[in-house]
Image (cartoon, rainbow, N blue to C red; front, side):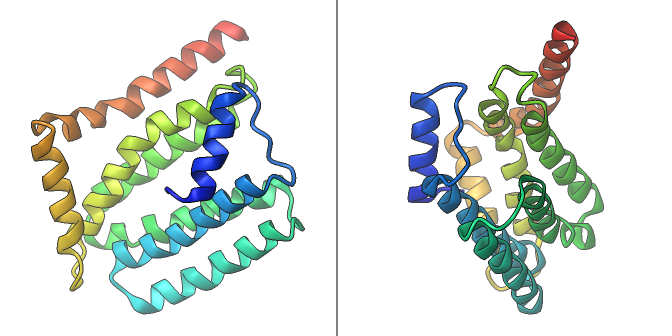
Length: 192
């Protein structure tokens, strides 16, 4: 998700490697809210259903509000992001179960570095963004496969990016989660 808050938060992380302030950080809060709003939008893109959009939007607005007023725990915030992702991954299973499985495992590979952040010396956040590329390709491909009036837009985006980068770039991203996961396992094993 790209938003001014996300940009500002990630710049602050880049300027202070290993330090990712979350508590009462307005940029982090804005980034989290933007993630939830994008999640609701992606639920529409992967389902093609306005009813599913409304359901996801209500859930994600509640999560966003609780984050903004800071009345939730870290566990609740993480669970809310998991359910947000399930909201846009689950409809993919109706169109293409294999792609839904791929999207789920890519999301898991993206979330895993956050869980292992301490064992990765604070590099979990950065590593998750590396793995995020393949997850994004899965979601865009799912949007392209959705039977909805606007479903041609993601398909055009996938074709345009793939063609502009020589066609092989999108396919090479398929290997990324596996490589990143193997690297994380090696790092964790060597520090244990």
